[in-house]
Image (cartoon, rainbow, N blue to C red; front, top):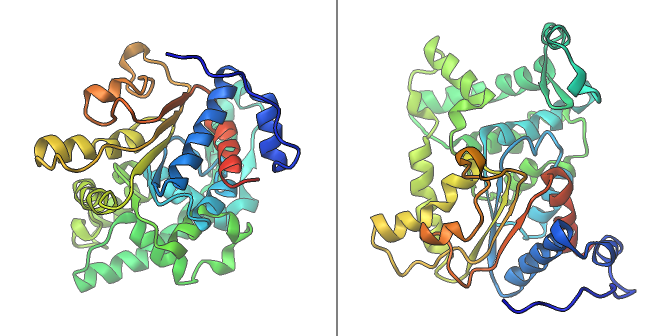
Length: 336
């Protein structure tokens, strides 16, 4: 592989965040960040579209501060996320002032954790989500939507129910952050396609199951399933890639990344739709390694053997903390 020239100083007229990054981020993971951001920008400039996948607790990390603007500026065209990320952005929207932060979370004893439980806090690393103000507030709002759909014999995806409660305005009285910093609200206003594999293991998914068990919801299929999400994604990918290349920007690992990237080999190998193009760009931010059989730490080239990426697909991997890296890449893409 031919070496590339050493990075140069940023032009004085560059946007301040971008100028700082181009001046200081010259090697190793820092250089990979710049390359990935430039690849993202080039993909969009050539007419491509981008899917962003969210694993981990990126919503509780308040990624909406940058992701919402990416959505508004049409830098993101679809999202795949865990059920936790779907709901936790809305938790933060309506209960931010009731959250608690535990800077010394590594030092907590089991007794400390029990006290948090007794205070009705659910801890995510250094951040504690308040049950009553966040989780139960969303439950009351979405239960009405579930019941109405159930009674009417209608069925919707998990994100569609979330869109309904956001766009209805019924939560506005509870907003505790500037709504422009909610990526879910930005997505709802754009009617952005969202895929939520494994929604059942989220808090809201557990709540839905409990209402089916106690009879408040009669039809367990009122919320559409993960298989239906894959069918939806197959059609969406097929339609989008008739006129544009679709890229894949993966934050973290797990099901949020593994589920959607499989749509291409399914289309090729199981449906024999070999005319459908491969993903046109790939980047993953992760600190996972390939030890102990981790898929999340696999290098992008491994995906060639699975029919997900091609030899020429631009591929980037940044082994770092996504809560640090993703907002910086978004800043470059946004020209900040």
